Image (cartoon, rainbow, N blue to C red; front, top):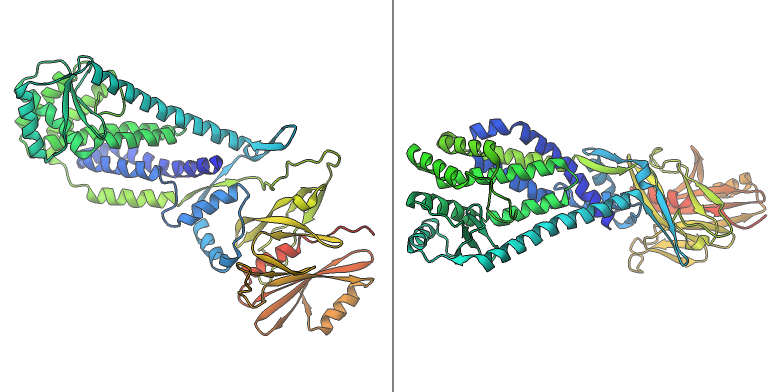
Length: 533
């Protein structure tokens, strides 16, 4: 489960990284031409996308991809006719990121009672989860400790000048929530802290009326836009994608964009003199280096270069263009790139292959051959190894190709009288000792058109069996033996042994060659004789 989640986030991290690189390369051009809020909105959308790691064009395909990687897909025969073609269309648009074979090789960890195997990929997923929990925990602990310190050592401001200015600005910005204003001597700069009960924290400093106006308005704009919640969003994204250095860069750029867009909002509609006064207030307020007490507040200091960038953006802000189309293009690009990248295993990993018996380490090989009705490339010749002891309890993954897309079908071994065969785990009802019918909820919804059965021809040669089949209407063509009755196609796979012939019969409706016509031959190919001569 954890491995699946990690692979899902890894896929979206790789795809969104392409968008981040494009935006970083165009950052200077975008900042010169468009208002900072548009790039900030783009970062917000990308952050949300990174926390929802499923394809926008086909949400189910992301889940299916994860199940395939774990080799645990259960073939849904009810949707076999329609889903196959849909998956192929999606797959042709994806760039596959292959995971090294060494990461998917089982590592056996044996105990007295049971065998347990993990892969290097599972270990990587656990490290990822641990790193994510550590990062988010550090931020949350830092936030709660700092807020507790503010509440304990801070003093409520009763200065009527400050409170009156706060009242005026709240009305101007249409802010109706209650805001506590505290003075905290250890605060390096003004900030908003708190989610449900916001607190405006001011350093223990004397401000002029002009400075007070700009400082309070700046912080209240942050509050109005919910920037504290957005900082939590960026922190969460960084914690989930901590393994990707581009996401760290994106988080820093998003925080800078938050401040630039806030500056633009504060100075919106003002003349050059007011904007210049605002920059002087910022300079006097942030002239010393601020210790970053907690990321979950509106406290900000980006260094000399960032401050110069803020000043330049403030003084030239009214000359920039509307960037709504840039935002729309970025959204389309982000969603499109999210469907381009996928993860793939480089090794066909069979389920429970690491299980070993105490006395018998030999394995049997099941050879898969192509018996599809119309597509000669549907099945892929593949060997699957299964431990020989306790065969009836074994489950394997059966690899097959459906129009170029590899899928794994979970198969459970059935042992009959003198033979064994793997049955996929989907609605098969055994109505006779050697015959199965497909049902849904115990009901025969297909009028008996989908079934297979096994017949043992004792002391007969291959030619004798073929003659009997021919008398029954079967024809041989291109290694196939089949017949058609009404709207049903009947096929038979013959298995020749020393003294007898075993035949696997199966039938399916016409028009389902890429569905039942793929699944049933795969089941027939797993037939093996178990009796001794």
